[in-house]
Length: 404
Image (cartoon, rainbow, N blue to C red; front, side, top):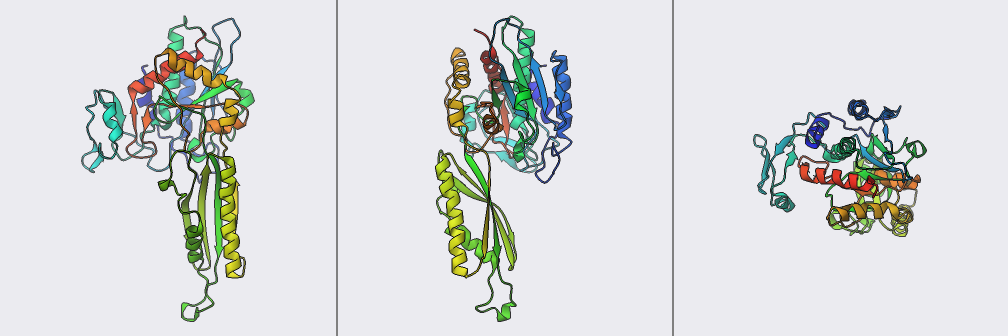
């Protein structure tokens, strides 16, 4: 099966996760793709392929070379994001793309405009897969799954390519931050690994945000508004004041590169009680701690001003920047850089303004930088995949595992 047909097969299966669910995986429909992939592994001769109780697919390809080599792993995630419906997906293949604005859905006037996404002009002549504008495409991360499966098929069809042992895993619930919650690094058995996820293929990502989240609870005093003077304290106004007291330039729409931010992701409230939920991100761990300190300081100042305990701050730690751990195992980077070089491809690195399963796995003892998939505009109706970039990444993975 060629890579494009694999990809189209996968994206038609709705695997959206659910951040409200308490089960693992969070949605049973992720298992539909997981079971299909186990069957495909078996067809490729990976006899140990199986689905565990938490919805993780594990598989191994044995070495076909008698000499000792590192055990290399590859991972991608089964689920899709929550921002748009996950299906039914109606993918459309555009061959020899002309570089112009793309009409995704004429009836609903949904247009992927070149003026808004100028980089698409650089995809001229490529084969694109797009949506009809009503759902996610699911290239994040079914493009990664298709690339890994294509790599395995290439190795099966070309036994002359000598390689060491290869480990594969497909995880559920990455999009809701639970992709590695039940991942067994020891059972996986790789010396190091790569997540195949994200955008352009000419990047190796091995540094990411340090993350935390904050829940702020505001305690007001509800009084009949007709008799409220000098008595009422409106919890909703406390929430507004709290937000205004935070560092004003550290919001996502005002930051880029290594600049950290805090992001108000949700709020609710009445006069008596209000809540605000933030995520806090910074590539520098010390700056993240300073940023968390700002939240606590604002709460302390407001409590002193109010004369009672009006603001509670709860901080929950998240993932951490994997950079120093990856740099402590330089072989994982050198092997990838060498693969790009042997294929005559330029590659660079930039910080991920987010997190990956790879960051969590790195902190579990499995160094795991990220490689791109040729998928763009993730988490929205403009999501697309570039077939030629997916094929190129498959060749890169073959080169990574190849014994030279």
